[in-house]
Amino acid sequence: MTQQESDSSDPCVRLFHASLVWPLQIEPRPGKDNKARHWEVLEAAKASHSWTRIDDEFTEDPGLFRERHYREFVSFLPYVQRFLYGEGRFRHASDKDDSGSSPMHVFRRKDILLFDDLNLVQLNVEVRATDLPLATVRDILFRFGRAYPSGWDVDGGGVHNTHATELLGVDGQVIARSDSARREKFLQFVGQHRSPCISEHWACLLRPLVLDHSDEPGDLRYRLIEYHRMPVMAYVAVDRPRELSTEDWVRLGLAATLHPDEQVPVNDPTVVNFTSLYCQDRFWTDSDAGPNTRFICTGNALTVVGDSASGFFADAERGVLAQFRHQYFLVFLLAHLHRASLLVFSDVLVGAVNALNIRNDDSVREFKRRIRSNFETFLRFTHRYWFHELSERPHLQATFRICSNHLRNDALYDEVRDEIREMSHYLDSDSQRRQSNTVVRLTVITILGLIATMTTGYFGMNIIPFGDGPPLQRLLHGVVATAFFVGMVLFAIARSKRLSDFLEVMSDDRMPFTGKLRAFWRVVTNRPN
Image 1 (cartoon, rainbow, N blue to C red):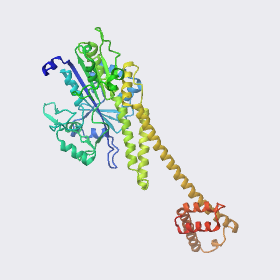
Image 2: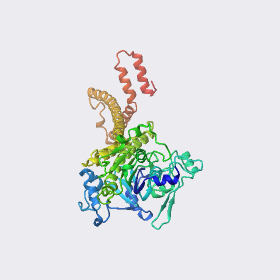
Image 3: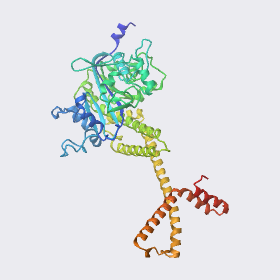
Image 4: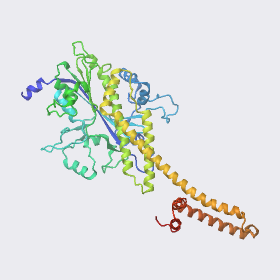
């Protein structure tokens, strides 16, 4: 078959939407003056970048609030509504009181979302095209959402990513170009930092956020959380979707991971069980009457395929297209928010353990501070962000569930919770150990004080009549006595561990008298056992 014949027989995609949802970890701001939150820093420097904060995820102008926005809002349960949209704009009298606002903060250039408590942002980039061959759509889904090249071909071009990408401004001028062919740049960066470098067009889009390992200056720095392939949603409106072959469905559903030139691995379990594993066919009737809309979710990708001639599928206000850009986008966003947040928690724990030096008191204190802070944030995450029921609409809830299951969110949550619990147990046991040591020292000092108390009690409190002398002499006696007893107490504290060992030796009936004398001598000379 010739290329021309292949193009003519390839199904045509009348309308194509793709939304990337790229989670990134924001590093804590260095220095003592780091109380300002990330979005506050970004908003304060708005004159130096193109990101603009908007009031909410819907629209800045209430007059532009459309039915599709309303349908999005009422699709979710009340506690999810409060998470996504806050308590209401005019509930609080003070503009500075943000207790009723959403924990999700939206900056638009086209979107970047920042979340309270979590050192996490999610970049959303949406692309749109019409009248594309289906093969081109598959190629875009495979190549577009790549943060950096995974290698290079014999011609020096990056593999698995777009050969060239240009970002255009509203005036049509090029803002940034991809640089995946700059092989030495990526090799040197990984060799020096043991961290991947971001392609220039993505780095340009994210500024003033800058890659943490780079030498580029910036207060807001980010790190990668997962693989370089970004999670992607795709809306594909084709003519006569019922005529798509089984291979077409598999290639569309697995487009983010299956190379366009690769043969379909027919014996792979994900291909053999493709329909049962990934397809949601509530709105697929395979009939002339329709609807013929299929949802395919692999976790990292959510693809919606339907009939371009169907109002049910193509209506931008009430159809699947409107739901794809609103309800299903948020479902996909929340599933990946859960996963990314849990990975951030795990990364913080690993960083805290790696920095721990049990021989350094400052390191131990910093470790405890980081673990307790992480535990506090995880507790808020559990009660504020972590939920399993989003909506009472069956298909919306089913889509969230299948996406979460493929991402292994529940298993990941259990793993992180167990890790934090182990850390908490370690802190509790360490605190108990320190308290036990303190009790031992106090016990030793109390025993020594008991000896002095019994002795003075037997002879009477005033063995020597210091109170009968002149005032200066009595003052001198008081100072000397105070200094002597303070010295004795400090000596007892310094030797409390060895005194405790000596008391244990003294209480041992099997220990000979010479052994007890040696134990006492070790206390006096502070020699090891």
